[in-house]
Image (tube, rainbow, N blue to C red; front, side):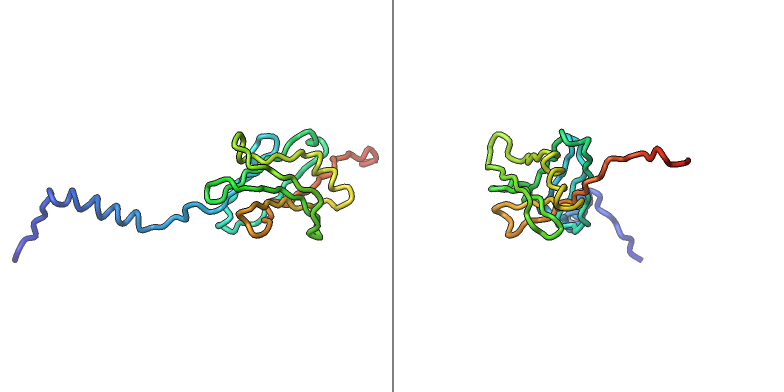
Amino acid sequence: MKKFKVNFAASRYFLPAILSIFLFSFSVNKGGDSFEVYLNGKMLFQQYVSMHQPVKSLSLQEKLSNGEITVYYKHCGKTGTDRVISIKNADNKILKTWNFPNDAANPSAMICKVKDVINLEKNNGKSLGLYYSSKEMSEARLLAVIIIAGEEKTDTKAGR
């Protein structure tokens, strides 16, 4: 019977090579579109478009009217050109748009005032859509559903 002899000197070269091939054989989708939504500087959510996650909701109240909604959208890791944020009602009618120039000083932040969005709700219902479009996209993409929440009121007659 023959004994199998391992050449340890050769194995220290082959083992890393085989391990590297194994690890790099798994593909990760690099790039792809992604976006982040912030309210008053606090990240509410980050989403990768290729993952087909459900649309998130963003709740706004009158007490936040002095705040800002900030959106960052990346096309394969790059900022788009001729960017537009739109608010649409349930009938898909555009109520307001914000256009963002191709600004080298602050290329990616798209800021909208909360009070502007809340004011749109008065005649258009409590649920609005936050959309993004750019030169790189054929049609606008729904980023979030905006829910305008009424102020909590206590009933002083309750319990009598």
